[in-house]
Each structure stands twice: as C-alpha cells, then as structure tokens.
Figure 1: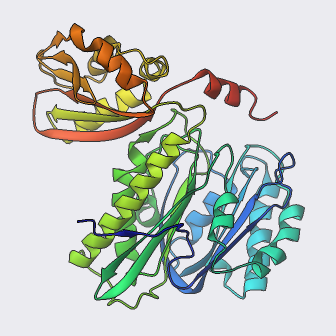
Figure 2 (figure 1 turned 90 degrees about the vertical axis):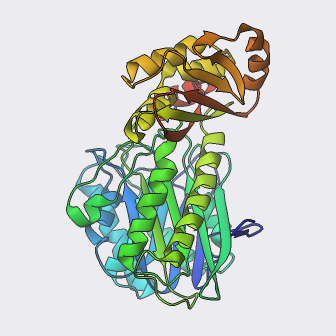
Figure 3 (figure 1 turned 135 degrees about the horizontal axis):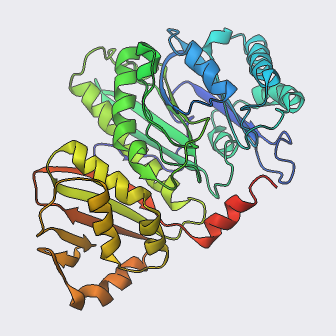
Length: 418
C-alpha cells in the first residue's frame, strides 16, 4: 500500500503557508514565456540544500552558500535565460540589488532570501528588467501561483517538472512539493557537507530544484534528509557528462502542518525521508525523459558487486559512456560496449557474469545469448527500459538513470548561445 497520496495537479503552493508567482520579464527576448519565479513562505521556515561543486560558481549560488547557515529563510527568487555567472562584479551587484529590493518590498530580512539563476554563462545580467518585474511578481503572489513559478525556471525543458504528495505525521496531514528544471548539462552528484563543514563534494549538473513542505522539523534533520534523498536520486541521474555552475536543491519547511517537531531520526523522520526520496525520484526520471534530444531512458542496475563503491563506479561508468549512449540512440544491443565499461571501471567480476535488458539476457554465465538479440532490439526501441549487469562477485548493488545521445542533442548544443 502506498504511503503517500499524490495530489492531482500538484505544485509548490500545495503545502500550507506558501505563495508563488511567475512572469515574463523579457530576459528571454525570443519567447514570451515566464522567465522569473518567486516562492514565499508566509512564516519563517528552516532551509536545507545541496549545491554544485564546479570551481566556477554563479553569483547567486555563492550568495546562497553564504546565508545558508542562517536559522530561518522565507523566499526563493529565480530567473531563467541568464546564468549570472562569470560576468564580473556587476553580476555580484545584481544579486545584492535583487535581494535588497525583495527585502524592502516583502518586509523580509535579506538573509532570509535565496536567489537562483539558469541560462547562458558570461552574459551581462539584465538587472533593470528584473527590477521592473519584482513589484508585479510580489503583487501576483498567490496560493495557485505554483505552476507559473515552475514555468519561470525552464530553459530548454519542454515541460515543467512538478509533483506534490501528502502523508500523515502525528495525525496531521503533511504536504511535500517540488518544482525543478534541467534538460542538459545534467549529471548531478551534489552534497551539502560544505554548508556545515566548509567543503563541498560532488560534481555535475545544470539543475534547479525547489521544494516546499509544511512539516515541522529541525534544520539539521532537514539537511540530513535532503542529502540522503539527493544521493539516492539526482546523484544517480546522467543526461550528459558536464559540470555546471548554478545547480542547487533548496527546500523550505515552515512547520504549518502542526506536527510535533522532528529533531531526531525517528520513525516520523524516516517517513518524511521516504517521501522526499519518492518525489525526487519521480522528478529525476521526468528530468531524464525531457532531456535535450532524449529518445530513450535506461535504468542501469548493477548487482552482485563486491561492495557498494564498485557498484556505484560501474553504474557511473556505464551511464556516462559515450559509446553506451550512442548504442542506446541506435537501439543496438552491443553488449561488448558494456564489457568495455566493466573493464574500464576496474571492478571485480566473474567471467560468468550476466547482462540483460528488461529481463532478456544478452549474456548469461559469460556467454552470448544470440537467440535473444532480436527481442532485445525490440526492447531498445522503447522509451524506457532496464539494463541489469550482474557481476556475481558479492551482494552490493546500485542504480542509475541514463539517457541516449542523439543528433538532436548535438544540434541543440551546437547553437545554444546563438
């Protein structure tokens, strides 16, 4: 029985005490689509997050890292169409001016306002357009504004990524919701350790993900839950193999649900953590399906590994392999490319290993199953399928989501800035 009720047409304003808005402010000059978004909690919330570790970091991300340790936060402002990154001191000033204006008009301390950007790196940030948009964004804040906000952060995405679930803690209904974007430059491997310990681990992604919940939970427990869920989901997603400058996952928890505050990893915490993994897993899969030029999404499962580290290493080796991705694009069951990944990853494996697609073996006990090749070709023609590599060396396993690499992906990114 499912523990979570998935809300129809869910958005980040479904949890109690949240308002949102989105609009077109002409950052994207070629399309009349929303390019700015605003989320506000009606009361101070605790926040947690994970961030990219590219050494070139966008100005908004640097600002958010600086304020993340503050005890409370209330606002998330985001724009698409301009990354506000590596564009000189004016980019930093644009963050300060945006935060100062939001603080003044919302009557919220500057330290409680997060900012985020996504788009092209190196371009002058159009602060004058954002300055004109902010008053209207604030006037338009509404309990049904979540969908517009979700559209305001999209770049090459074709659809918004949103989901909301409801579950019960201490006999109180608790709601958790997410909106996200990401279609290219996505191989998240994020970590929030630097928020507390001064150093971030991980790499890769152009992804913005904002979550809201009315759960009453302490900031350390919220951070713990987010790091665990991100590791299980976004850190196992590979669209391509590039590291971005702007990626972040942010969550606000305002306590409006009225449950007894969660301060230890008890059964209530574990239920919330399960819900967080569920919504982020759904989001990660939707990001993969909507990846730039993507025709096929493959769930890559490594089993029978000597230890968890080797399972992860092989899963990432396969998921990031250009030959594997082009194999998926061509719907070609060339299992030799998978064996190349096994060898390149230096994991322990039995010569009698198994490889299968959707349960149909192409290699069983180390021998090719040539009679199954035609059926496997049919599997690879589907939008989604599952690859299992059983190394037969132990009991550890791991899972990734990988996409193909198509001519359309090359075309999109060959002309992205022009």
